[in-house]
Image (tube, rainbow, N blue to C red):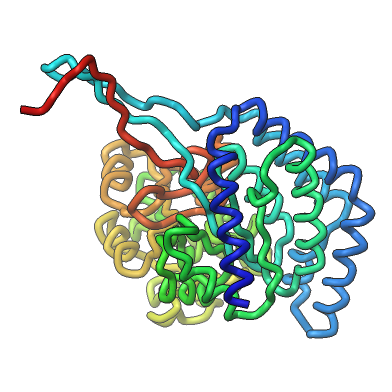
Length: 416
């Protein structure tokens, strides 16, 4: 196993030199060809996916996991559309981001270049195989994919199609490499390949991400969980606040950018909470409130301190009444996960304080945390959301799959 993983990764490293120097035209042709082959092969993909669904049923996996695992015509069409959207995005490779002149006449600048080989470890969703491949190729990177065992038949079928497109366009097939070894040990071997794989991006539950981070010899870009907050300020438009909070919790509760705690200024709590909490309950949300919240609206559970650290990924919501913006920001600093946090207010100074002082990958004024997404931000598709502070933070699109190097134009300058 160890030797097999090493050989596959070495082929990806070799291939990375070819894709790094590919023109935008060639990269786009490869991605378009991949989209065409996916469209033509939908019946084959659905048949392979049925094997994974049957196996998942036998193993007793949850309905939610089986839903994420399922490929159908609609989802294959969405993958094709995603690739077509990547083609339409500007190519970041080769962009000179700044240039300056030194006193000796030397020009110094920074240029965007591919990172090299990106290792992506993910669970359940086979569409990730296609999304990640399209993004990595457009940014000039080779990719080593390690999908979850529950989607192995689907992923093997997808990678076969993606490799056919590479071959037909004359590109090194190692640009897309799939580790078809389902054991956990395969992941542990993969993340030791320092000097071959340049960056690891884990996509999945907190347990997977912590295992990868604790054992990797390669830099890891990740977020552990999304404990996201919306603070309703005393100077908020309460109708707007209600819509934002409802969307942030209910629209898709099982996502990392869904609200887990709603903070409400005590000045407007009695006016805002009854109707808001009633609406949540009508939508099936379980409310866990602080003492002040339960005095205003008694028909809810008591919130425990450990609840404030929890990412529910479900229709469960913590509610806390706070004295003011300072207490709200203190709460976020203590219990938050630096993912997505929002304030609803009509006060410009408070809005700017919140933007400056809340230390999260995305901070919102008068908008739902659910908008923390590469597509919503205009980045096109995304490879994930990072809460790290080095290299990339927030949704990671094409630009975040590159790094910069210094470039120098001289005319014979020497150092004396």
